[in-house]
Image (tube, rainbow, N blue to C red; front, top):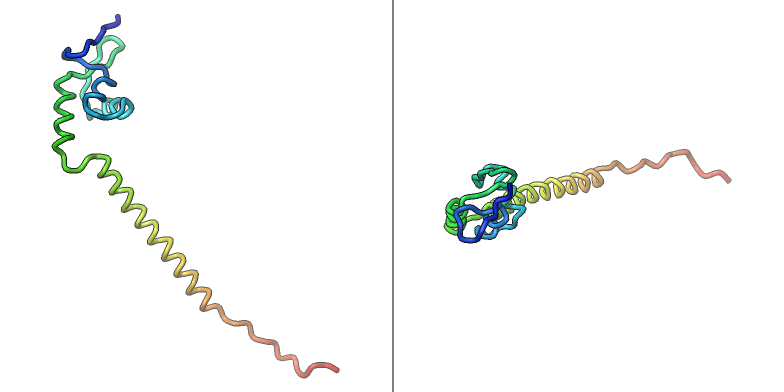
Length: 113
């Protein structure tokens, strides 16, 4: 059974909810899958209450740091740590190359004539 969802009604499709919230439909589907956006299922359709979508939108607008910014900050910290490790490896290799003993010249005696 197909239920047509009209704009302005109390139920929205996942893409419609994403549009109202201001995220891509992929993000909206991921939120629904992860339980971040409560849904109901009618037959084969997964729907969101308009009021729920509007509440999520208000929370996102009021939040000082978005989820994306938090993820970027975590990624930045991980990359900085990785960079520090690479720089340490470079310093260690440079120090190791400075410490290499010079080959001793063989003392075999006077040159042969």
